[in-house]
Amino acid sequence: MLRNQYYLLFCLCTFVIATLFTYVLQRHCYNCPLLNHRASDPDPTLILVLTYLRSGSTLTGDILQQSPKSFYMYEPLRSYKSNIFLDGQICNIFTMNCSKHSTERILTVMEDLFRCRLQQHKLQVLLPRKHSVAVMSVIPFCKSRPGFDTCMKKLQTLCYQSQSIILKTIRLSMEIMPRLLKKFPGLKIVHLLRDPRGIIDSRRRGGFLRNTGKAQSSKSLCTLIRKNVQYSKTLQKRFPNSITTVLYEDIAKNPMDLSNKLYRDLDLEYSDNFKEWIFNHTSAGTPNNSYYGTVRSNSSKTSQSWRKRLSFKDVKIIEDECGDVIDLLGFRKVIDVEDQKNTDQTLKVRDVDL
Ligand SMILES: *[C@@H]1O[C@H](CO)[C@@H](O)[C@H](O)[C@H]1NC(C)=O
Ligand SMILES: *[C@@H]1O[C@H](CO)[C@@H](O)[C@H](O)[C@H]1NC(C)=O
Ligand SMILES: *[C@@H]1O[C@H](CO)[C@@H](O)[C@H](O)[C@H]1NC(C)=O
Ligand SMILES: *[C@@H]1O[C@H](CO)[C@@H](O)[C@H](O)[C@H]1NC(C)=O
Image (cartoon, rainbow, N blue to C red):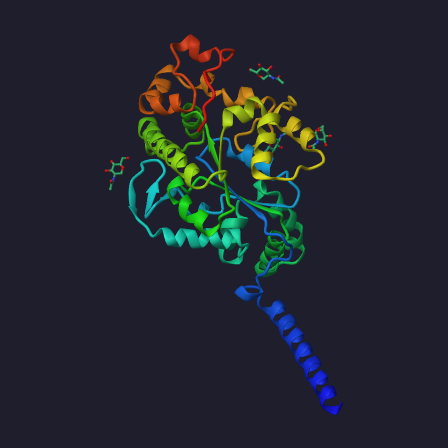
């Protein structure tokens, strides 16, 4: 009898001490791996939007982050500047000049991000905050309680509680996706593509071509797209249902249908005012087409505006480097200036299965 009581007391004491210990640890050590368990079951849906500089990814990311309890990271690899990671290599986006680089290192970063271990990557995640609803939502808290660690802890908690973690990047190539898929077998990859002529025009307007020029930039861009599309086809056989390919022009022309397709493929939950949001941001006629904004008065028109802006000569420079890619994506080359400027006539000649 007495022995049983002692035993019970011992258990109770152990329990209390363990609880206290965990509590103290949690308060002072939110960076400890063992305590980084998720608050909510089941595991969140992990989504990677793999795309290219100026490819309509801001709109696409915004559509995805409308899903309730999603945690969106907009260009968390931004500290790598104009570089992109290929298998065992890091390359300049505009020249595709490459040097050796361990893929393991960037995979570790990706793993931290997808597992919400954000505090190692403070600035990269917080800098482009205006694009992420999740990051914006903690800003008032961060202002009222200054201190970077408290702020990051809040953001990290939000990440742990989310149902989907969406990461958009222009700095990873398809080549390293098999290794990422090995770490995260459920990962969904959205390969977002756009007519290279639209991409190059947008880069030109943003001042991104000052050092390399149109021909070299087009060549580099299309080398990358070509590789990624080829690689994606191989990957789809190895990892069925893990890659969804979309064209920005299709989203812009038919935002509701394409958003529905994305949500279906990615298993995302809809928000209550989803339809209204899509309408407001793509077709409402609101006159705000700022360079980095995503409210488009008519997204279809915006996606084609390069045809009015680029000179015929520049279009031909891009087409010379990217002819096969333009064809691969289902577009055709322009015949002459009149054909180029006549936006009533679409350049999309067929739907492609990529
Ligand atoms: C990098 O690319 C430029 C073209 O923009 C080329 O002139 C240069 O030789 C390249 N450098 C290396 C190290 O390959
Ligand atoms: C859509 O725009 C209208 C008019 O500006 C606004 O009242 C409404 O709240 C917006 N809805 C969404 C979901 O953004
Ligand atoms: C247009 O969008 C930009 C950037 O999102 C914003 O700063 C500006 O206030 C908006 N203008 C109007 C008229 O809504
Ligand atoms: C948007 O522009 C396209 C082509 O310029 C046009 O066909 C379409 O009717 C426009 N949509 C709206 C909602 O104004």
